[in-house]
Length: 209
Image 1 (cartoon, rainbow, N blue to C red):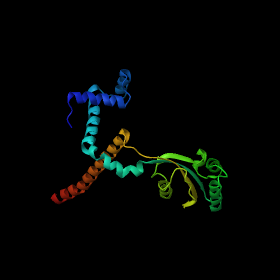
Image 2: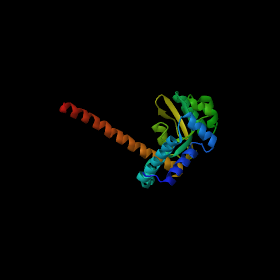
Image 3: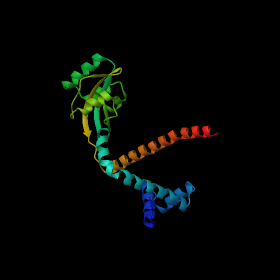
Image 4: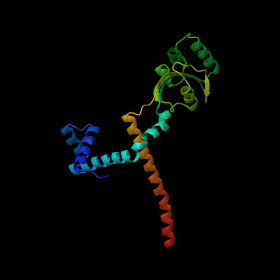
C-alpha cells in the first residue's frame, strides 16, 4: 500500500481523531508520555492507515455476503428470564404468568435464583447466540411477548419471554467490525502457515547436519 503526501496527512489526521488527540496540547502530552517523536508518530499513523486500506481492498467487496453469513450472530435480543432449580415452582410460576396473575418482573425479582433477579428478569440487549443454545433456539423462534413453558437447562428450570429483537444492520460500524474480523482470520491463517513451515525447516536442518 503506497502513501502519497496527501495520504500521510490523512493518516495522521485520522489517527488523531480516532484517539481524541485533536487538541495540540493533548497530542503533545501523548507523544511525550509514549516517548515518541513526530517521525515515529507518523510511522504508527501510516501503518494503521495502510492496514485499513488493505482490509478495504482485500475484503471490501465481500462484506455484504459475510454479513449475511454472520447476521444471526449479530442480531440482538432483549428477553426476560426466570430460573429455579425446583420443577414444581417453575410450573406454578409459568401458569401464574400465563394467566397474568403476576408480572414477570415481580416474579423474577422474588423467585429467580440467578443474577437476573437483580434486573427483575430483564437480560440484554445481547447477541442471539450468547444465551444457552436451548434458550437461543426459543428466542430465535419467538415473537415479541411470547412466553415459553419451563425448559430444562442443566440444573435449572428456565422460563423465558422475548421482549425485543434488534435486527442487525450493515451500517458503517458493523462494516468496520466485519472487515476487522476477516483481517484477523487472515492473520491467524498466515500464522498457522508459518507454524507449519518451522518444523519442516527444523527437520531439513537436522538432515543437512
